Length: 167
Image (cartoon, rainbow, N blue to C red; front, side, top):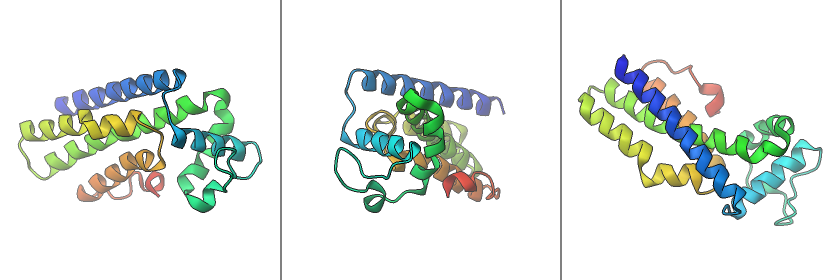
């Protein structure tokens, strides 16, 4: 149980690092087109407009339908000018959750504690996680953590946890 708490705290700490890096990159104009499109769509929907972006001229939801994006609209309205930071925080937490689920699955499948922690570290600090959390904002990256948690819960015979988020 002690290892579990330590890894959970490390997971949250790395999520905070991902958030800070993302916020600094955004503040220094180092984020790209995809993030700008999502921010524009969320702002427009939160303020009663359609999803036609000023950046592409197309209805974003007809090209990239996403229920998860629609679920973020009320949060967008509440966070006001902090929309990017809210998105980065959710994405950072989601990305870090993948490593937590990998560790839980490894332990549940009977892998050695050292191997389980190694898989956790590789997943948490690998280039894929770093890019997913700080490269651009994508709905897929936002969904990975909850989906991994659902997979872990299913494997651990607790399938009902996190089902709504993953849906």
